[in-house]
Amino acid sequence: MTLLASINWGQGIADAIQLGALYGLVAVGIGLVFGVLRLVNFAYGELITCGAYVLAYTYGWPRAASIVACLASVVALALAQELVAFRPLRRSGATPATMLVATFAVSFLLQAIYLLAFGSRGRAVSTLGTLNGAFTISGVDIRWIALVTVVTGILLLLGTAALLERTSAGLHIRAAAVDFRTARILGVRGNRVILLSFVVSGLLAGAVSVLYTVSNPFVAPDMGVQITIFALVGVVVGGLDRLWSAALGGFVVGLVYGLFSDVLTSTSSSYLPSVVYGLVILVLVLRPGGLFGSWRSQQVERV
Amino acid sequence: MRRWLELAGPVVLVVLTAAIASGLGSARKSEFENALIMVGIVVALYVFVGNSGVISFGHVSFVAAGAYLAGLVTLDPDTKNFTMPDLFGPLKHAQLGLVSSLALAAAVGAVYALVVGLPLMRLSGLPAGIATFAVLGITYNVLSYWSKIGPGVQTTTGVPEATVWEILVGVLIAIVAAYAYQRSRYGRMLRATREDPAAARASGISVYRQRLLSFALSGALAGLAGGLYVHELGLLTPDLFYLDLTFVTLAMLVFGGVGSLWGAVVGALAISALNSFLGDAENTVDVGFRLTLPNGTRLVTVGAVMALVLILKPSGLTGGRELGRWRRR
Image (cartoon, rainbow over all chains, first blue to last red; front, side):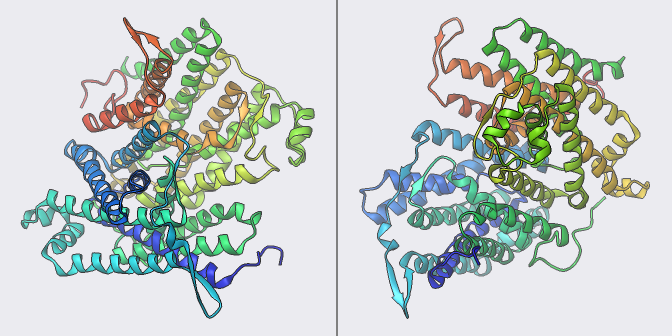
């Protein structure tokens, strides 16, 4: 078996689970806004990049302050995306295709700004570098960050679920996700719900910045692109109609990617993206509603 | 008269661009040639996206396929033997002329689009967008690593370059084909599915078949544009055919107006012009006063202008109407 590299299985699986948890979080962030607005935000990854830059530039601050600054600026950027770009677009009655291209444009613009402001060479981020240390359970080395990521991920998902299920604001978000117009007629404040969902998805993006930069301690202008693409793949593969299926989809894509990149040797892992994309096409063609989506056929096209 | 303008407008515009280019020095000229090729790619994209209303992030794959094939078959076999020893036999030994390489490029674009479209044209909306994106990801990944079909991550130079008139002819072919298609019964049927899929189905139109036809034609034109692109640049490398080109061409189309051929041509030329002006301004340009912009402003401004136009006029500069149809609602 020359295809398989000799690896430490326990650690490989732990790393893959960590990657899965990260992509699950990103998928929820994207899915939350999608649920309310029916808008896929291609510029979501740039939020994560922004957070990573803030971490890099606040190195030397107390850690907690640095993390708070990161979360705050990511939420501010998420709100700015909505207020400056997406809301005016909705007002002017853009078609969904135009909206999609607009999020592409915002992503491109933010990357260009990062490039102009911070240069192309990238910067090291080492806020929580100590978490890269490992502990040992029955002979298996597991890095602390894997544990921290999984626990934080679960807590954040539970928190988001509690917000959606237990609070009236969450009820409004869910109502808007089911039928935006009817929800507005029934007294849900549309713009406030949208802003709230951007805040929550911004917080999730900030958390991802903090966790992601521990094992990838380097930020460059295009860091967010790859993350967005893979999370988006996960969201669509999992099924966009519910948050938990999106989260599961993100988790599965991260897990599969993590496992394969550990198991395969470097030559055969060159084609790993192709394998993942190929699986995506397969899933989409066979089950356009997603792996974990509802079994009923896709929505009937309305006249 | 109006009908005549629909074709004449785009044709006059690209002929003018080529005419201006032919009188310029080489650095300037290549910017104009580049603009012409962008017109070719955006028109190809328009044939599918504009007429079907389905977004495709995968068209740059067909551009890449055309570019690679056209580039490889025109390179000198001795050079190929030396720089790309792993190349497939026929690719390695072939040395064709410009026209036949472009015909091959269009053919490979069409075949690739047809093969991809067979399963994918059943999708619409977001799944279609993601699936076409996945095609782009696979194309980029394979072109970067498979040494039997190209130079891999390295850059190959020495592809024979075409003159601006040759490029013009290629772009004109794309425009005429797009025009002929949108006026044909197939084009009309596809536009009907865009406006109202249920009504179109009820009138006996197969959405799948019409989309597939348009996708294949659009793939052929994209392959042709890719062939022209490689003959303009003279070099091949996978990074040319990935996210940047996808984004820029889609933005050009939306900027001009997705719904019309006129919009596709205007959008491509307008963004190209803006792009080259700002590129100059980064190295100081004289606009009444001497203007020098810091490096990187170009990308920021292009992005900002595109976002701004989208926000202020989401149907694009032309409002998705053909030339001569301003007042018809």
